[in-house]
Image (cartoon, one colour):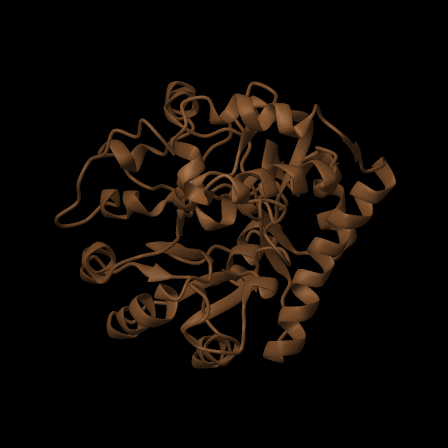
Length: 345
């Protein structure tokens, strides 16, 4: 990732090894006990083959899953959820949360938290990789899922004024939620990207420059254009430098506040239940977002921060709670546990 992105917003082996060296990972990953910690695991898209052994491990060893309100009672009021309590959180509300995880959670008597993105959810089945509104209402009303916010749009945005690449056919391999909304069409210039919840100011690229690049690709073979050995240099000449503008500090603060407030408001209205908790996309929360989370009435916020313990305890900062990758579920004490050396998050 570009050096212009702060280290605190980056993942990968280096960040994972730093967390390991500074004791951020809990002892149960290495054969120890859980103690007074509440492990909160995050998961995304899942298959039955991957998820079922992990749920079976929890069920066979007497673990109980808790909701966000129970986590809040622990963190804010010091009310412990009991022995062998864990939390399972699914980010993004991918369709597998309904088709795969939902029946397995019911089968094993588990509950989970589902952090949904209202702007990504539609009414029609099959048009999106995410659950539909009718499915989301079913998940919430079933009691199996505790649906909470993952912000309104889960936006990745341009935040630099230097072109770093262009949309090519390979861009289709980029994870869907990592693609800025402006990255539309072959040849579109790409700039350094950061989360809307970071402290970065959004860069609005000049559409005329992007239009020239897209038109040049279209008139020179479309996807075949990218077989040319010097296609990037050619598009840089067509782009004719960098043009655009940065949003103001005031606009940034208002946009972040709206992302947080609207995420809860839309979910609450569509589901008919209060939504009061949020997980930050990619775990990123800048200073502006941190203040906005509190100002918009959220009770809990899950967000990454370097050198912080990756479990939850009473008295933790309720607006910067940390989670563990779901791959570590089978490291929990019990029959059939495994040890895991966590080189990455």
